[in-house]
Length: 133
Picture 1 (cartoon, helix red, strand yellow):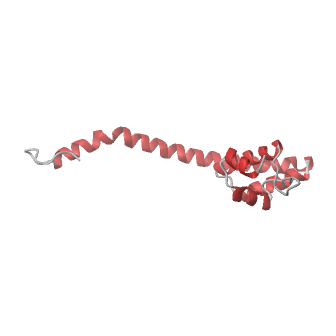
Picture 2: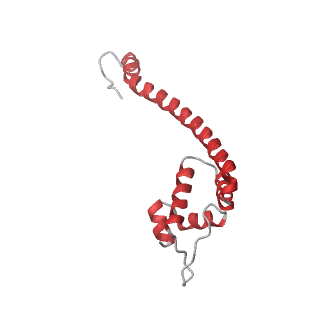
Picture 3: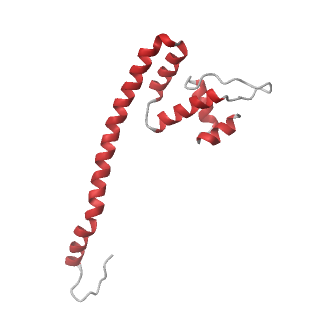
């Protein structure tokens, strides 16, 4: 696949893909005879993994370290797993914070009319000269 095709498939710009390759997030992409990048299925799997992790808020530094360790082979298994566990902890904490915020918003939305309408009625002139906003 070309860089344009990969970008379209995963919703990333060509510049982002080049940047990810330059900093080591994506292993070096093979080039076709014309010099253009030629993404394989394995390359696309890396792109999808990185996109997923970045969309979840995983920091670039942690991902660069993970990919570098992966490229070193099986001897880095424990270190890679530890990186994933640490990211899991951080994402779980963020998830719980977002869940708490969502619950608060849901409560406010559910009770909005119950609280707002009585206040508006108090502020409305007695002969209904002014309508509710």
